[in-house]
Image: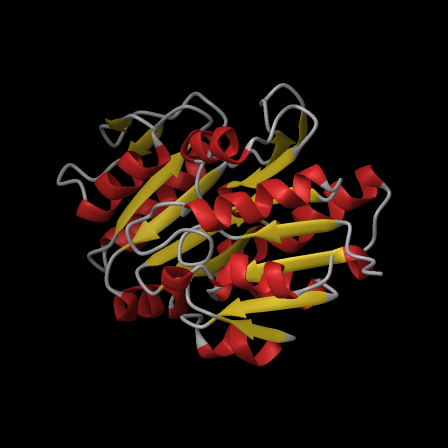
Length: 268
């Protein structure tokens, strides 16, 4: 009999196909887990607003939990109870914007219900994130301070330029933030120590569970800690090489219902 009691899955590039849609097969597989009493946790870099429609489709409710903003927000699926909520400095947002702008990159801040950017020529990837995350975008003048708690920052643009900017990152920022690429063109900037694995540990402590009871699915670098933490770590076929190396299992790609296929074969 399987000892797995909690299943966590990344969304983009893992559970969702390349059209960013949740297939019926993946949806049914997760709903069946819930019916068995297994905790199903959507674990995404997206803001909570960009996850809610999937929670509804799968049938997750106030008794379930979700992890968003790449681990910087943990809450019940109905949004009524928050277990962990990062708060980043708006002044750091200004300073980091100066750094990344020098490299031709966009930078935006995410609060619970809005996105902000100082880039007067808004980067197309920032617009994309606003659309996917269902967060309205406000473009600020450089002397304006964001008044709402910032949960996560995100640098967007050419991957090589992101690497160049990180190579010149002042130590003060390296000491105060966690940095993680969710795509080659996305750099997640989070409260120090925040990631999907830490979020899952907080949640499992709440539920009285342990990593030995965790199964996790992922595809990119921001899933590394989560996959390492899990007793059963699964990479989809389209995952980056680094993730495949640390995974216990490999399944089909996100475009071929890899999550559902693995769950159908694994005896939970």
